[in-house]
Length: 313
Figure 1 (cartoon, rainbow, N blue to C red):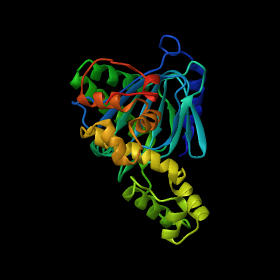
Figure 2 (tube, rainbow, N blue to C red; figure 1 turned 180 degrees about the vertical axis):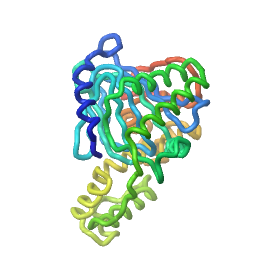
Figure 3 (cartoon, helix red, strand yellow; figure 1 turned 45 degrees about the vertical axis):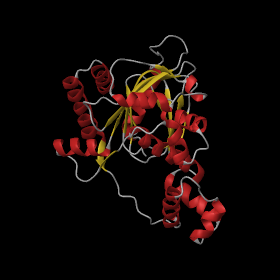
Figure 4 (tube, rainbow, N blue to C red; figure 1 turned 90 degrees about the vertical axis):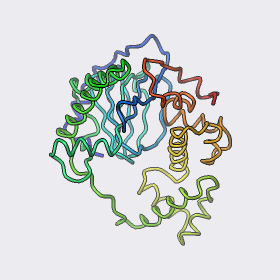
């Protein structure tokens, strides 16, 4: 995804954003939903050692860095986001994230669903088709502040302010930094095999075939399938499968399934196996994520590090 002219401004802002509003090197994170803002997940966190492996989201990412530097790895580019900048990522775009300075980074992130983005786009009436962001990083202190205020309003239980601020900042990003999201096609050689491989992995998530077995079933070679899959989805099949398992586990947790049961259902060996990958990709342990679906208010910032090893159901 290209960064456009805003990327240069965002990098300059990143160089200035060295302050993390947190005490020392303690990591904390809260990933939750506010019942009055349907179609939206919220994450507010300070990460220092935590790194997000390559993964993708079903919906969009609109993140305001409030301190330090976040380094985001996108296909073909690495961005450095600092104070006053906003990170924009479209659905299904593979990316990584990690601290860009020793003190880490703090941010307030909005994860709007496709339906919410489409609804706002229809209201402002400037975009046709499915909207997509055309910049990965923009320097916009006003929007960054508004994103943080969405979080504060939601945590305070002020539904009117939270909804107003949310729609305002989404409309601002769509108006200034979006266009029609291009339809993905299977024009490149091997893309059809990659899509079939993905479908088979989704069907057999609990007991996936080996790369050799998968290639044989599709009538191609393991190396050709691996190359095609990377070209199509930005990651090898085993990395994609781990991400897909975590995404499905999230849906099960959303439905009230206990973490231990969700772990086995999606193909992890046990709950600690789920905990490890879930925490790396989502940013909080499964138990903390599940508690955040109740719509409770208040900061309730949990430790990140503890979730890497043990998380109660």
